[in-house]
Length: 210
Image 1 (spheres, rainbow, N blue to C red):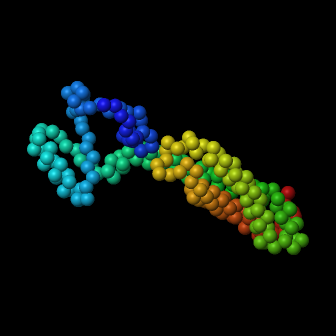
Image 2: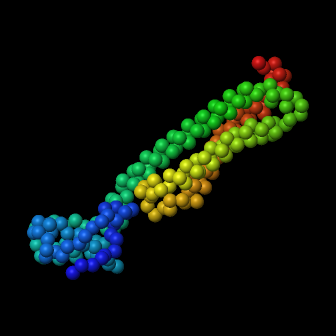
Image 3: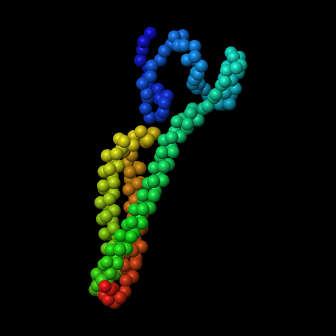
């Protein structure tokens, strides 16, 4: 008898590897040493486990029996993808921290470079809020350009990351939106400190600054 069966993901949760089935009576004797049985029951897992052990023990008391729930089986298959996801999350957090520190350093340097300009603006009547908007607005432009480039790269690499995802779409708008929002928030907070410092510049001291 020859037929086609549906896909079964025995080797993982993402892909179904090519497999073929052979009737048990056509297999060598040593090929049946390990057998897996899936049981679906509305009873408590412990009751089903005791029943299976008693049935197997009645057939052959020397047969070893290993029982696990479907959640435990899936958890074992998810161990490697979960570790990779945690590792990538750590790297992403480090990259976000480095980006925030870098943005803070660049913004602070530019504020120092524009000290005289800021002093002239304040002397001509610019309010502290206007100075803060000037500095934060400039940083927002950089963040927007970087976020657009990062979004394009994320969408382009979604197919590569498909093997690391389980029950998550390749282009998840919620995840992408949350990532962009977090990046923008951290970047603007990093730019806000130099902006506050620029808003408190003494015009006289700024005009004497070289």
